[in-house]
Length: 489
Image 1 (spheres, helix red, strand yellow):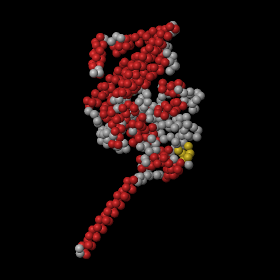
Image 2 (cartoon, helix red, strand yellow):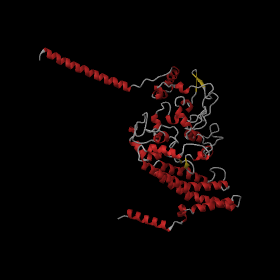
Image 3 (tube, helix red, strand yellow):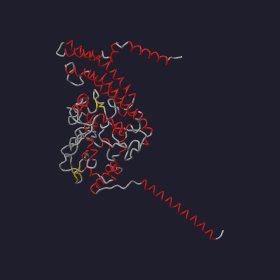
Image 4 (tube, helix red, strand yellow):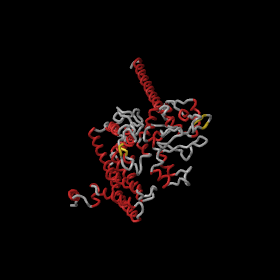
């Protein structure tokens, strides 16, 4: 090999070696860039807060550092700054601040979201003081005069209010009263008069959209024996798909449209709030709901407003909004079929159990057969279980395609409660009133006559052994066929 050839070979090797070093260096540098957090913007007014709280509450600061707020220069003072006229203003390190960041504060940047939320059912969740649920928490379970905080029941403070919210009271020093704070109830009444808590879903101080889109976020409140939406969702095919393909959901994407950014499964947010390709995000969770499944007797979501002479978005339009979401995964005939089945379940509950039981209870209360005091008689507890627990489970189960909750946790328990508890207890209470021959004896007789009329309706006649011969024959034939299928060889 000539000297020139050797020189050329050495030069080529050197070039390759240098190139390799440059590639490795670029890769390592890229790793450092990728692994490095994006630079955050801290205003001078918030810089001191961050410096101090990095020592006193480092997790809080780190959550903020990981937020979009930090990337866009929204700092502590931008959210917590207060004016002298604010009820909850107090001086801290030379600045007037407020602990509570209300939806009104958030509306400085998120005005559309706040406007939608303020008109939503969520915003009114704190208006529960007159409800039977609150009677249970404050009186039956608690003791408002002796064992509470500031005269309030700990059962309500630690239970009801942490989901529903309450009026947040402020002490003379501008700090929130511990009898009403901490409180992230979705419908709390803030010192500035605004309703609600953005952090109920968006969890401070990171305010991650991934958190708000998780079914677990809704499950903080929407779970349990009387409204088990989270458990119902988890039983449904939707919930099963979410658990299987959660990693494909792109929960932090923006925008986040079903059928475009993700296709694996819907979450609570998908159906009730999030965008599609032709429908915007909404913070009014009622805009896609057609039935009110909460009360003793379900009615269309706009029925109350119509009775009050108010003009609101119709239940038909709201159903079309939900169908818009459904159509991103299902055919029109499939969606229409679901709603036919769902409506039939609600009508069954209403007509067979909800309306008759409610009519009987109202007659007994009005006629003095039952006392005016809530929950002091066995029948009142029975009726409460019937609509508030079992009835809701049946209805919610049907609304979200969870068959076990619709049947065994729902209609089965509704029927058992109605026939085996409610009916005998009504008869017992009325006969007792008649024996006493008091002023309510006549009312008791009217209740028994109404109960007899109800039980003689076609759907209840089996209970009186009055099933038609045709229906008996059908039942017998079906039973015989069932026995043949499972007969042992």
